[in-house]
Figure 1 (cartoon, rainbow, N blue to C red):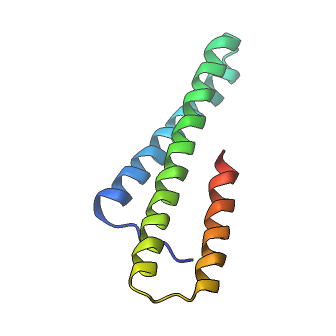
Figure 2 (tube, one colour; figure 1 turned 135 degrees about the vertical axis):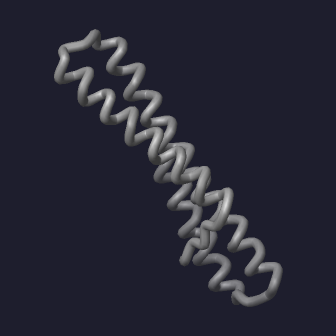
Length: 95
């Protein structure tokens, strides 16, 4: 399954990933500085949500692309079932 992220979709996913990267760097600094546990966990939860949202955005784009391909009739029923299973597995990996 090849994913084609373009334009606004790509920008949104990259922004979410960069936000998560910054939050994770902040968590590392907070731990090194011996900051309050509650603050660290709150920041870590924010990073986790940003990563989850990026993953869901990627999966949603993949679903949209698959639906477009299926409507065009370029996949056999077996291919469609396989793709559905793969996408379901990806979705559940983030749940």
